[in-house]
Amino acid sequence: MTGTVKDDTGATLLSLTAGGLYFGGSGVGVPLPSTIPDQGASFTKLTSCNSTAGTFSLVATTTADVTGKPGVPAGHENRFCTSAGVVNPEYPTPGPSGAITGCLFGAPLPIPNANSPATSTCVVNRVTTSASGSGTCSTGTSSINIPLASDIYLTGPTDGLIPCPRCAGTPTTCQAGPNAGQPCTPGNSASLGAAFPTSHDCPPAATANIGALPIPFNLSTGSQSKTSQDLSAQPFVFCGFCGQQFAPTFQGPPAIPCTADAQCTNPTFPKCRQRNPGAFGQGPARTITEGGSPAGVCIADQAPHSSTLVSVFCIPPSFNTTVDPAADLPGPGAVALPGQAQLIP
Image: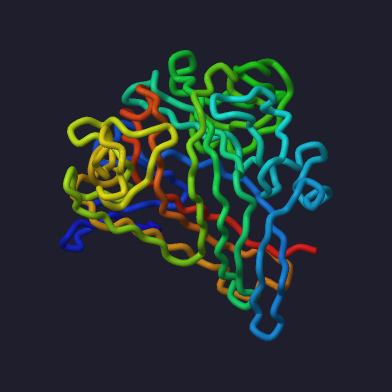
């Protein structure tokens, strides 16, 4: 367990586990958590090192920065860097939100919905604002701000509970999608479930792209939390967006985030609210907390050390009439990413 959802009394409504993605309010119709692909790697660059305090600043890497680094195959540097604006040859066709640029963050993420297979989606995450952050050498603590765009591919109507094309078989080939039958390298473990392994060698069909959600991803080895508000249109609001009072209809796109009704100036969308109150299937949710863990040792030895990065964030509506009711968006999100922290030359 890495986190909790608690009510007003402090009682735990839900325990959050590492390696899982949680999203939506009390009305979420997707079984949670969704499994996050393992084996992903992202490189940031250390700058402004203070040798006295043992602290450092982190900035984004470009494709040139990660060329030749351990585990980075030639020609696929865009899957390991952390800069915005990088061209992704795997996704040449612009989506409804525009060009699919920015270093890729992890392998394609399948979100199968056993309750409604046709609403299953494949999510491709990419960097929209170049990463920045800070850390401490002696303990391995770190904080990394890496805003993402989550491109949503509504593949459930054709692919059901295998929403991202799998990279499987002997030898491994793409099992579906535009590259079906082509050689591929798995980007994660088959043991994660029937929807894995996935790979950027096996992208989903471009025609299934329904748009991108902006995700304010701020990862930390410390603790992160959100507390809900009771607003005029709705109690237990973690992530308010301007909408209508009596219907889950929201201003946009783009969606307008808010913390009070006074910030909603369009008379058609005068109320600050989520789609449904609460978090992750829990109605009377007051707090969401995720706890990360730093390496706990000096990472200057250039060896890998176990670490967990966490983030609690808000997810706007996609404005898709299939996805938003199933995922109960807009609403909160939470994630804990177990992995390793390592300083390399």
